[in-house]
Length: 84
Image (cartoon, rainbow, N blue to C red; front, side):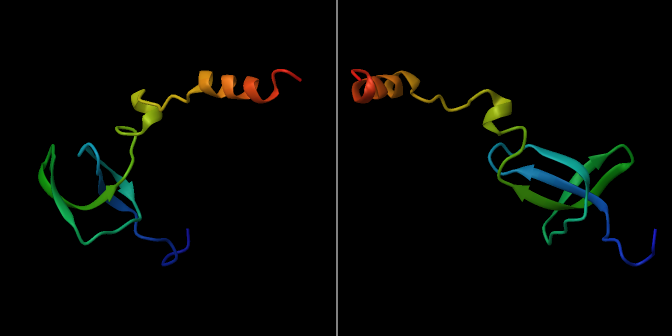
C-alpha cells in the first residue's frame, strides 16, 4: 500500500437516532461529537456518529413493515376494469 493516500481508518461509535442503541465499529468518518465507551481495558473516548436508521430500527429487520392495502387496490382495479 502506498503511504499517505489512504484515509484514516479508526474506531467510531454509531448511534441510532430513533432507538438510542449504539455500537462500536471502524470507519473513516469523523465527528466533533464524542462519547465515552466502556472497553475491556477501561473507558475510552470515541467519535460519535448519529444515524437515522440502523438494523435496530429499520422496518425490515424489526418486522414493523408497513402493510399495503392490497384488498382495496384489488377492488379498485375490479371496479375499473372488471367488466371488460
